[in-house]
Each structure stands twice: as structure tokens, then as C-alpha cells.
Image 1 (cartoon, helix red, strand yellow):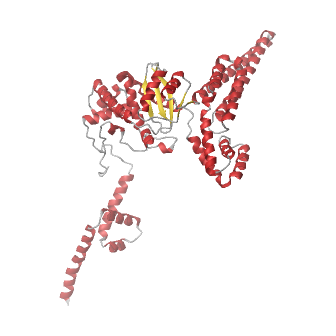
Image 2: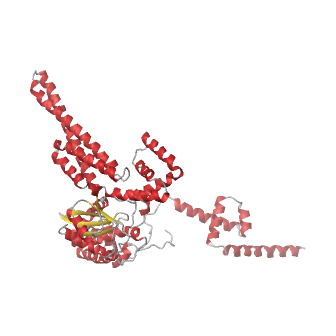
Amino acid sequence: MGDTITTTSTVHPPAFTSSINNSAATLTQEDRKGLAIQTIAGTKPIIQLANENNVSRKFLYNQKDKAASALDSAFSSKCNERDVLFYIPVTKKWIRQFVLALILICHCSFRGVIEVLDSVFDYKISLGTVHNIVHYAVDKAKEYNNLQDLSSIRHGAHDEIFQNRKPVLVGMDTESTYCYLLSAEEHRCETTWGVHLLELSEQGLCPNYTIADFGKGIRAGQAAAWPGIPCYGDVFHPLLDIGRLVIFLNNRAVGCTSAREKLEKKMESAKKKSKGNTLSKRLAIAGKAETSAVELAKDISILADWMKNDILALGGPDYSTKQTLLDFVVEELKTREQLCHHRIRPVRTMLENNRDNLLAFVQVIDKKLIDIAMKMDIPAYLVRGVCELLVQDKSNECYWRHEAKIRSKLRDKFYIVEYEVKKVLAQTPRASSIVENLNSRLRNYFFLRRHIGNKYLELLRFFLNHRSFLRSDRPERVGKSPTELLSGERHPHWLEMLGFERFRRNTSLPR
């Protein structure tokens, strides 16, 4: 009997232990993670987890310790600054792409690039080498610029910006912000514009219409190169001019008020000396000038608000009504022209001579609104009513009365019509202000002109067209480049397009 007990105690436990070890060895990495999480969570007793998975309690405690150590490491506030995060294989080709990244992303000057490489990498590079790197990139960028298909562009914005007192001709797609023309020229005449537009036609550019200011060369050049494509007026510059007029008149009114107040103080002092009559006439003239200046500033400010919020706004009344309103503003400016001739007359003349071009976008909207009415089989005046509703102030009770009246007639179609009208307004450009935005971005790269001349514009056009938006007021643009928005297709990183291989860390290694 004793021999039997001894045999049982020496044979069975080793066999059971071997089975447990074999089971633990077959567990995958994900299985071990799961067991560690369950052990830390404590949802089940250790002995139960061990039995269910055919592993030992010691094994489970080991997995728990590993997971706890990993969590402590992840949330630890202590960081050893001497720890190596990753290694970069620095080659001459890597140096070249680093130079371009410093210049184009960080706006670093050529000598700044030299200093960065010397200070951070202990690597010497000459000014000529930096020049050659950029010059090589210019040639590659120009090839991509000339190969881009422009046939999908529907609306173009044309303008002229000035660098070093010389014009730079600019053309951009209003939807994708793709820049298809960026060229420094000696002149901005009809021939110069016409030649560039004809060259762009070879890349497929044939927009429905373009938007530009009222420069003679830009409009004559388009009329010669694209006789069937209209050029609508840009509302950005007129609104800018009117805004400057309002600021000038407001400042003048403040100055007149200040002058009158100073005279009043002098009058009080003079009265104490019984000499008040010496300033009475001057004070009366100053008071009259102040009244006139304040009234003029107030009137012009009201007209400017009408221009911005009603006449040149996307929403609101139809084309003929806005024509009448613009004519009214012109007449009101004309009656006040004598009060500030040198400031009011240029604005009035510009509005009067370019009325139809400024309001051309309204005709486009009118046609689209009629299409909505026909498509949804509803009266056109109701669609127009929704359009007028969009420019009204929601804090005003008139808005809600108007909205209730239209909603009662459209019923369940109201929100669908509102959505379609908003879509139409969003897809109808009326300004070339996008070019002004580009101009502000180019100012950060003027240093390139000193080193490689006007060729730098080709490189900048390539870079800005292929660089993804980090942020934008329009969510659909974030994370995409203008080229991707234009073509609808993804493209490699701009450094890879220039022939470089970007460094990528090995994410399988611990960090």
C-alpha cells in the first residue's frame, strides 16, 4: 500500500506540470496580452483563469508584472533625455532633401541652411551647393507644372501682384486653390496675358468664366485668347476701396470733433479774459465742419453696408433689383461727391462704369435658382425667397416672419430647398481674393529671388500645389493638396516627386 502511494506522488505531478508548460508555450502574443489584462482587471480569480487556460498561476503573475511594467513606463513622467529615439541614415541625398525642406517649409535663408547643418549636424556645405540643390529642384518642379491636366477647372481667378515693382501674373482655381499661372513679367499688357492664356489652353484649361479686377491688359488679353469665355468683375477690390473710403471719412470726422473740442477749451479760457468774441467765428466754422463730416461719414458707412451685405452679397434679390440698388448707391455718392471729391469720385466712377461686370455673378445664381425650381416643381419666387432669407439677420423678428411664411408654402420641401440654395451660393465665386492670399504667402520666399531669380516662382507653384493643407475653414480640404483636390487622385509626397526617398522609422522597434 505504501509503495502505491509513493508511485502516485512521484509520477502524476510532473506529468501535469509538463502539460501546463506546453500550453503556455503555444499561446500567441495577443493571447498573453489578453491574459495580462484580465489578471490586472481582476474580473476573475487567478486560479480560475489558470484552470480555464491550462496555465500556471506563476505564469499569470509573470504576465501581470510585464503589463504593469509597460503601463508604468508609458505613464511615467520621468524621461531620460539621453535615450536614443531613432537613428537617421544621413546621406548626401538626404542632405539635399533636408535643405529643400528647410527652405520651403521653414522659409530658411540659404545662409541659415548652412548654419543649421553646421550647428546641428557638424556638416559643412557651401552657398553654391545650396544654390545648385534649389536650381535642380526648380527644373524638376517645372516639368510637373507643365504636365498637370487643367480641364476640370470651372472658375478661374486672375490678378496681378507686384514684386520689386514688376508684375507677376497669377491664375488660380477658385475651388481647389490650385495655382496654374505664376509668372514674373516685364509688362502686364494684352499680349503678355494672351500668350500665357493660350499656353494654358494647351493643358486643357477652359473655364466657364473667370474673375478679375478691371485692369485693361488682363481683360483684353482674355478677350483675345478666349473670346467665348466671360470675365466677371471681382467684388473684393470694390469692397476694399469702399472700406478705405469709410475709414478715411471716419478719421476725418474724428479729427473735426477733436478740433472743435480744442477750440471750445480755448473759448472758455478766452471768456474768462472777456475775449470770447475773438474765437466765436472760428468755433462756429469748426462746429459746422464737424456736423458735415460726421453726417458724411455716417451716410457713406450706410451705403458701404448696403454694398457689402445686400448688393454684392451672394444671397438677396435678383439681378435687376441689385442693378437698381447699385444705381441708387452711385447716385447717392454723386450727390455727396463735392464734399470729398478726391476720395469719393474714384469709388463712384468705378462702381458706375463696372456695374454689370460686378453683378455678373448674380445672373449665374439666378439661373441656378430657376433650375432648382424646375427640378423640384415649385414656384421660382419661393426659391428666391429662401435665397433672400439667407442674408437676413436671424436676431431680427422680420427674419422669422419671412421664414414662417416660406416654410408654410414649401412644407416638407423647405430644408431641401434651403440646402440646395446654400450649395449654389457656395459654388458661385465672386472674388479673386484667393490671389491676395497667395501674395501674402509668397512674401516669405522673396529671398529666393536674390539667389535664383524669377525661376523660384516655378518651384513655389509646385510646392504650394502639392503641399497638403494642415488646416482650413473648409473641412474637405484638410489633409489634401490643391493638386489632389483638383484631380481627385492622390499623389506622392512633394519630396518624393522631386526624386527623394523620405526617411521612415521602423515602427516595429520600441520607442
